[in-house]
Amino acid sequence: MRETLICNAMIFDGSGAKPFPGHLRLRGNRIAQVMKGSDAVAQEADEVIDAGGAFLMPGLIEGHGHISFIDQADLMDLAVIGVEEHTLATMHNARKLLDAGFTSVNSAASAKVRLDAVIRDEIEAGRIPGPRLRAASPEITVTSGLGDANKMHVKLHTFGMVVDGEDEVVSAVRLCIREGVDNIKLNISGDVFMPNADSFSTVMAENEVRVAVETAHAHGKRVAAHCRAADSIKRAVRNRVDMIYHCDHADEEALDMLEAAKDWVLTGPAIGVIIKSIEALQSADDPALQPQIDELKKLYDDNCWTHAEMRKRNIPIVIGGDYGFAVNPQGTNANDLVYFVEHYGFSPAETLHAATMIGARAMNRPDELGQIREGFLADLLLIDGDPLDDIAILTDPAHFKAIMKDGKFHQQRRDGAINTDQENSGRGWLAAQQ
Image (cartoon, rainbow, N blue to C red):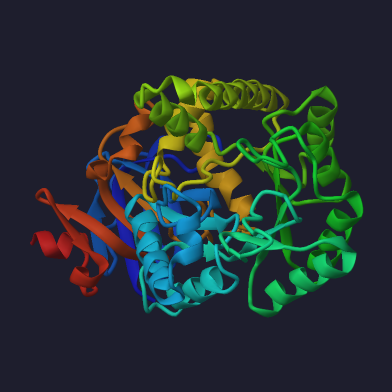
């Protein structure tokens, strides 16, 4: 197998340990050896890279992705876009995420049943660039719930599959599994600005959640749920939902349940879209928008309180979520790293741990992703600067000296120029410099 040696790096291994100087030997697409210390090592490899003290870390993991969201200002855009254009847009979004340093994405919903699965398969076949992807179903919801855009006189599909009752729920889950998804998404609670199901409501019935989870787990699939209301969180935990997103309005009982389940459950706040939506409404300077601003500010306050409490209780939290709207477009997902520090009280090291090792749990691959460790997959970022001093540098790809996925360079920066995977043509960084 081809060997690559990365020398003289400052290694953040994702485990929670402090960074250390060292060298890394890669064999094929795996990490073969992690060597601590600054002593010189034998330069025996097919390719030798002198990192020059740059920060080496695992690739970022988006724990709540929506790569088929098209930076829309109106959800109706998802209803009217043709499947051909939508497929191409989703392909381009996958590339944007990899360009932004996200080597893995756990999808929290696809806007069409097969979109995620098709893009995942094309990435795995090496025909298009993109992160490792766990494909999701659309958001399975109930009549009048989040994702139901239908009217009596017209049927509109945005990102929801509208079903009611146990039989319809089971049928929808089985259909999505047949079409190749890895994750099933349920909308248990409502959301802000929903006329019939606000963010404090719990609209998917207990028996509907139960049969959805039982069906998915019987097929070896994982289940994620949209849960803003406290009762929706409790309903999700009781029925063994694997990933519970948002959790904004959690009460003490809900937090106690999440803490008791922290060995198997994951959470993800998706605060970015809240912050950016408030900013956008405020910039409009329209008094008529004040009720919407007030509703979002309440959501923001509850979200911040909840996730600060989760941090204290060591409830596992992944970064990312709900990027792909006009206010927070695809590729800006690393803004979440800054938000975790500024709004939840995480340290930069805790944030990077969430974005790597905890994210690997979302990918259901904790034994081969999210850490720089012998035997793990070589998904790596080489950073110009220290994210532990300034986490915001990860929001600027200009600081990425290299992005590696599966032991291959996706991008390398040399002399101020970016070279993409197509341009590299198998040549290494050092070889190109010579």
